[in-house]
Image (cartoon, rainbow, N blue to C red; front, top):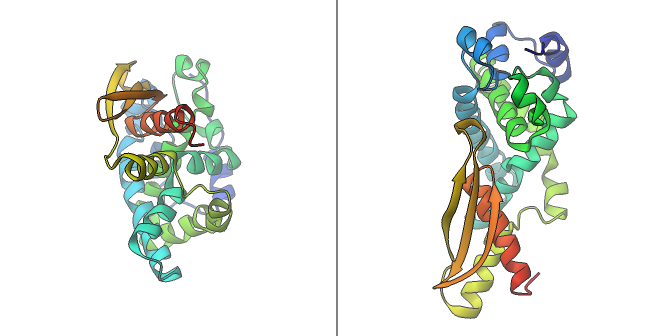
Length: 230
């Protein structure tokens, strides 16, 4: 089993010294790492917690920042907490090198997978929350996630393909597109979904992703191209 880099290096990188190191250690255990999981548990529960902390911190930040309507703030929040953005932050922190995972997972590129990195980053947020409380976790989110808002808005990241496609379809046809699972394959820790997007009975396009949401985004992106709306 590959040995991750010392946790003290990561603590230095994020500017937080954990009182209970096991919180951070658990945040960096991929579910494929059976031996480490038996000792500490994997990072999925911490990811669940960190996701909620990040959403609250982001919502509070945006509410205080702007008096924009709810729909626009929701799009801004989506841009900030999307997996691709969190994975970028995790790469900047070199989070992948700290992860404990099986040799097979590592051989398949596990240390650089967007979903694995994003999940691990959310788990770190959960670990910070448990060890230091909400205020420190909120500050951590502000320092590493929320400061990117202007850049993400300038890049149009708040306008995801699924939302754009839905608006275009509703404008042109008066109906709302819907999505269906075509294929679901792979082990629980590394699933891949194929989703198809429909306008009424018309099957417009398909997309793949490691979650249903990402597969839907890929399908919407493909559908925009098929329809010539992009």
